[in-house]
Image (cartoon, rainbow, N blue to C red; front, side, top):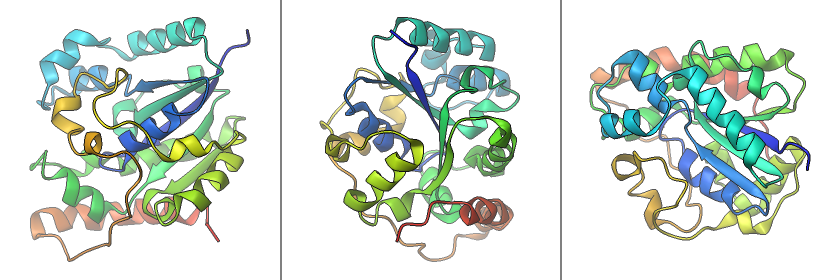
Length: 244
């Protein structure tokens, strides 16, 4: 059997990335991996995220170890595809040779929406916590890689998944399956060990909800972060798939 095709998803936090992982898990012959570089990110930064110790004890604590674990999945997975859910800020200084032949999808969302949601779990967040600078740097750097690469605004996708998901799949060069539009409620066997701290809301869902409005301005503590983040988001947004 040939090596599975890697569908490499790069997102920021609070960008429906977990629901998207659940969606791709419904594809026949698709294996999903949840944030393989999270433990090495926590080890490197020393950040005290919820569930830190359990994460460090359960996953490789270095990027080299995480890459080797990905290779193990590639070698052993009896699947045609691997959907790899990654957070852009987890991957600072991580080499991408293992993904050189992957197709890449960057999921983006307006920073105001990300910050408003993420601050409920991480009140002292900074610009680096939302990953938007890392996303733009990584988007620029992968232009030399041969695989297909697309940017999708998550809220625009949510406007009509029945219409937008086939367009996304076509752009990635993969078949669309209607099964991708729903999933079982509750915990999944492939959830990272950190799920109790981050996935409680998505575990209540069985399908995509509606996109959110931009909403009122953020309080000054967070609006300063938004102001810094928006130019990076705008650059990515200009290159996104446009659903017509």
